[in-house]
Amino acid sequence: MPEVHETAVVDPGASLESGVVVGPYAVIGAEVELAEDVNVGAHVVIEGRTRIGARTRIHPFACLGGAPQVTSAFADDPDDPRVGLEIGADNVLREHVTVHVGTAAGRGRTRIGDANYLMNGVHIAHDGQLGSHCVLASFSGLAGHVSVDDHAVLGAYTGVHQFGRIGESVMTASGTKLSLDAPPFSLVAGDRARLMGVNRVGLKRRGFSRETQGQIKRAFQLCFHSQLRLDEALENVRDELKGVPEAERLVAFLETSERGCCRP
Image 1 (tube, rainbow, N blue to C red):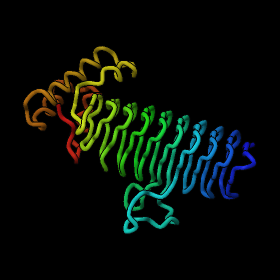
Image 2: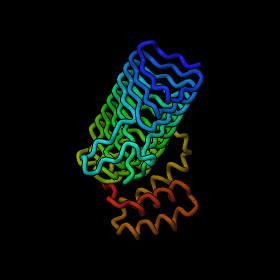
Image 3: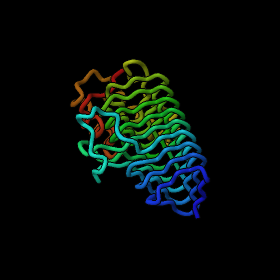
Image 4: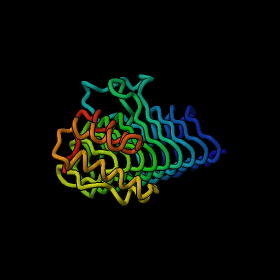
């Protein structure tokens, strides 16, 4: 059975599975679904069409599932069934984290994967897509429609422009401002962000072999340091590193970038 503090306000329409704990003065809306063993801290507000996966821990004063921060001209009907927020299992959302629902004009659903750690003050705006096993350090902010792939690590105060993309295993330095896409496996820093090299620490943490790390480094040399046009560089990567999954994912990311990618 759920354990709900006597001062919490839980709408009768909300769905709380076994093992859910709701702390003092928390507010849970009518269309919220909390899976087993979700822990909701004091003064947390969860509203909208929000689903939260098992064992996720939400610390005090977080606000989840609120309306997007857009001008009234673009605001969706709150009753539109297409908009919502989906959060996976085993996440940790620290104090004052804010995540908004999606928009019908965008992806519809803001989504967060599994086993992510969002530190205090992190903001994920409407239609954001966060993968799994990511760490977002304090006061990082993702504007609307941003996507972040698995195993990314964002340093404190990182800011990401609308529609920006961050590839897998990217690491951003503290205070990074991303107006362009960050390629997979990269280390980026600065205002505006520049490509500083391969995220060697992240690759080691993921357990990539030395051979794979060397192949990724070679792909970066071909893509960013060969003085070739991007299409020519990508063709060289395909030829030299054929069958290397990480190189193929890097090429696919660069080919599909609409904003352009960070460069050295």
